[in-house]
Amino acid sequence: MSPLQILGAGGVASGELELTPGLAAQQIKPHLIHEVVTQELAARRGGNASTKTRSDVRGGGAKPWRQKGTGRARAGSNRSPLWSGGGVVFGPKPRDFSKKVSRSTRQLALRKALSERLRAGDVLLVNELKLESAKTKEFLGLLSALELKGSALFVAQAPDRNLTLASRNVRNVALTTSDALNTYDILHPDKLVFTTGAFEQVEARLNK
Image 1 (cartoon, rainbow, N blue to C red):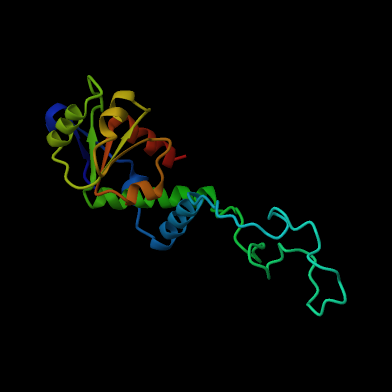
Image 2: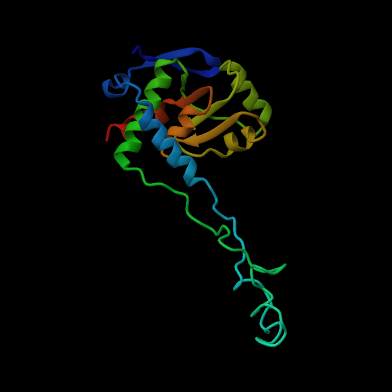
């Protein structure tokens, strides 16, 4: 795999970065990536659907009528699931949807996903992602200089306030940092834009 060009101000090439052999030589394994992406999406589920059982519904303390002699069926509470306004039987309760995937599997899937995006030419390197102010117009100028169309993920070494504020109203643009990058983040956008430092941090993270 050929070296990555590093873009400077205005989208002009200012150097090259050699890829580590371990990253450049990876072959795609869809089942690993599918397993990790499923785990990451499952972890984002809130699991906050909740219904009330008969013990949760307010009221129902008094027995509706005496046990015998009325000719009606026995009833102990008007909050029984059989009654209107009663509790729900086997309804959903808050739960944890997360799945367990080993650290080595997550590392391998991340490495293979990034390798595939590199092979497809979907990764851009820039010297830095610094804005003079938190103005959206300035961020749009950056997008124009890099000739980005469609969705894009910007990966920086650390959170940047100006970059966050300037990009938050721009559609199809997301920000993350090198230590928070995951497999789903890599696969989702059309283009990945790394700072040189962030890309080197990700390489070091994947080579551990």
